[in-house]
Image (cartoon, rainbow, N blue to C red; front, side):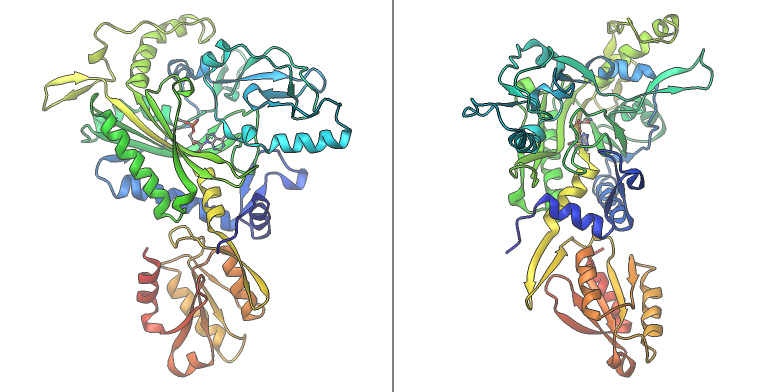
Length: 512
Ligand code: GAP
């Protein structure tokens, strides 16, 4: 039976085998930033390829895009991010640590005697890994500010101080940077906090330059940045991360149908890529949890091994209605005010919507109905890093083989960083030459790895740990009858396959 994985097992495997490293490790590391090593970058690229294949390649109604990370400041005014993209935080008066209000934990009831320093350390460690500290994504700042917050009886997750907090205040999540070398005309810009807005800003360009007709989608994969207050759990929540987003435009009134369509499609994507059904579920957002732009939203949640093994968001699927396109139409009408205000957003209000907004610049003309309207949008929005973590967790297994522990990653072939490893049994008798020839032939078709160092058993174990589905070994018999052994990672069964049949055999097994 598959072992229940702990996050520590994954972190240590990732470091040991070069999947993921702490950023800037030689300088002591940079918190919440990670680098993908040789195996990790292959895994991450495979996750992205799998998204692109299912969303663009296999469909006729979605096209791709790759937008710049820096965008016009008005984009963030129109989208609402400039004013609303914030978390509610409170600062501990004792240690000055700022914490999200929704991440503060109640003091345990029994705790009437002040805890000892050791108890504080243990308590704060527990609180930091508790489901509440890990679970919630950003809350609506308006809804959060509207609530009264009694922070007496809440504990600081850093020092354990009890109820000593400032009044809750909003903390803006977008990273700022300067653009331009001259102080006078340099502008404050923001690193994008989601890739979606680049798609809305290009809606007209795509309509005008392609033959797309509603319903259709535009997708992109790229980096997003959020100055998260709480970053925890390895690559689960970081300040720089990669998103895969799809904005699927449809006629108002058909949005609920497409919402259900994309819920099914996205759930199936994860299971087809190997996530066990019992570790996945949907969670509908409560009305007070909905983002300012959404009519409905559901999270695809995965049972990540964080804290108590709680369910966490893997992807959000939202019905964004016509909010974004309408907001950008207002933004276009506000542009002059921005110029007049010395290219500064401070104090600028978005212009009202034009009376004929349904036929505005971001409207769509429906040829069949001879009607103009602003399309509705269904948005599946996935985290590439978070998906990679889920695939690692789900694939991880340990089993006893002849008194030894075998660690392995049971990746589906499409996700495996290396598809086939090729070994000569020994480094003599012409075996390395034959094995190298096979390697050179096969690497034109799949990502392959050649290894001639160490005992064959250890070479198999190293590939098991990297998640390589098949290992080929050239041995004495190969030199007699041109067959090699093909070993299956999961069953460890070996079959002999003739070298002239190898490519077909592997293609069929790998199903790529
Ligand atoms: N455009 C909608 C949007 O950005 P979101 O729920 O904030 O929605 C979508 O983000 C997905 O992006 C999340 O489900 C998660 O997988 C990923 N994500 C968001 N913030 C992240 C972070 N700080 N670190 C890693 N992944 C993150």
